[in-house]
Image (cartoon, rainbow, N blue to C red):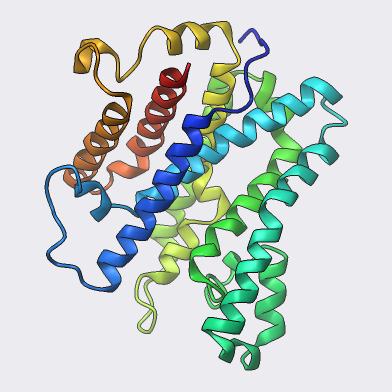
Amino acid sequence: MKQSTPPSYFEAVDVLRGFAALSVVVYHVIELFDWKSFPSAGPLLWFRAGWMGVDLFFVISGFVIGLSAFAEIDKRGAWNFQGAFFSRRVARIVPLHYLTMFVFVVFISPELLFTNFWTNFGSHLLFVHNLNVNLHGAINGSNWSLATEMQFYVLMLLVAPWIRTGRWWAIAAVFIGTAWAWRYGVTLFVQQSSQLGPFPVFVAATQLPGMLDEFVAGLLLARLVRSELGKKLLGGGGICSSRFLGAGSDRAVCDYGDLLALCEFLELSPDGDDVAFPLGAVFCIGSAIRDLN
């Protein structure tokens, strides 16, 4: 792909990221409080599958982190971008993570101070708490995904130059093949626990290798928007173009419609999220970018 110099920030993607976070929150409220009366049809159906907001977040992260890494490589070169890139990522993720840890331990679960504290605390400080089923989410459970995110940043230090210029199909094959092989291996070698139920399977499946198909969907979209082809495609219409929904459709309704269609597909196909979700998320992000410009 011929590289150009595109914008490195898209406000609409932040809106989509906020929607992903809201989806996860509403989903947990529905599940934890057994909210049986919450609508199971219509526009609010999405929130019953709001766990997919985490998957959407990983795709968005691949897109945003890809743009950031590529921009640093453009400025500093493939062998000198790492320091500036990683320091910016750490500055964004570490302070808030540490703050939420402090608030959670002091004000919500102070008993954590007296139970395996140093191992628990240290693993969260180093973003490796997701590697152990007993530490995964032990301090503010929703922060398990930050460990995967930080590990992805480290991976990008090694592979960003290749992703920026390598053959897109080879990149997709490596990332998607790794993710699918990992998750298949989880089905073979990780069993449910009599005490924890399917949680060990979830922990194993959501390790970084198992999430690479979602990250690479965003990474390849980042490459696309940097190319002349991408500018033409995003400027000329996509999944939300007038030929699908009619001229003049509101862009927010359009993007939300993409999510609902994806949700309905996954409801009908129990394994559909493994294949379809990263692609569907790419369409949503692409729509958001196009509508902003």
